[in-house]
Length: 350
Image 1 (cartoon, rainbow, N blue to C red):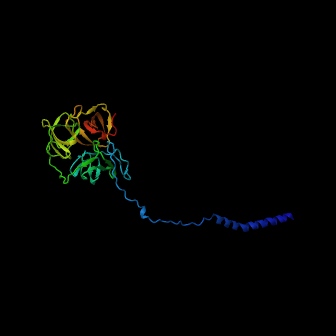
Image 2 (cartoon, rainbow, N blue to C red):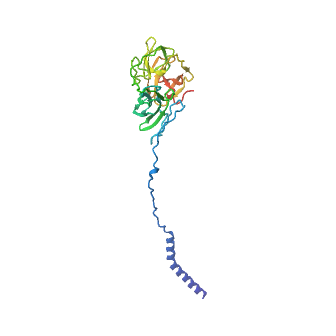
Image 3 (spheres, helix red, strand yellow):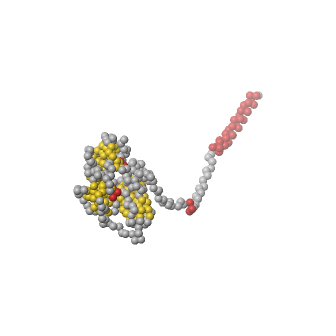
């Protein structure tokens, strides 16, 4: 009898399991079903006119005490371009100050330059072109009357095709601030382009000054440049002055050229300080295009032709020369001797 009841109980349990199995499957399927998705609501805030930033007001940079042109690649660099190497030279010739003229031409040298602008209290003047060390820009600017005009020179450099950065400076190539004091009368005189009467007496030319317009009656800064390498004891006579330039004639009449008036002094200047300690050291240049002037060793030339040299990446130093605050190096490049500015060297020799 107990065995019979056990069989009946087992059969009843089997029937219950068969009936409950579909219910369990449905229950587990409902638990595993993904929750219904919700579409997020996106709210777009209306633009507030007061949130638009006001245009930046240009401010004039204060003069700095540095003696090197301020260089700041901007933008840095053009999107998709590699970082530029050593910045190209940006040199500005000394300005004439004070002056009673209402305009003045500014000479700017910029390597691989594509655009140069000069900003002052009188406004901004921009000139575009293909500027090189051998092809400087001559930009005429207006001057604010009876005021100091502070110049900010900005140059745009194309260091590789389609890649640009900018350089800026507020000092000239010898370290003086680019400030022009304009003193005008009620009726300011018009610019005088004809040569003015010469100054009396004997004058001298600073060593390693650049000269141009040999044997010409009028200056033309775009002409061939030469480097005067003789000592400063040779006397000259002033033939004429025109703007920022002076016409000189050497004693005996063998040399006849123009130069910047700042290169002319009334007393014999101190001789250059020569240093032969860099002799034999290799020097690298900041670019494969440098501005150099022919030289001679051990005895200097009187005048050496200046030009842009292409394809030179290094040279051998022969000696160093210091004139005032300027430092030059005599180097041998491809068996030729040149004078170069310390600015074209990646690192000066010890």
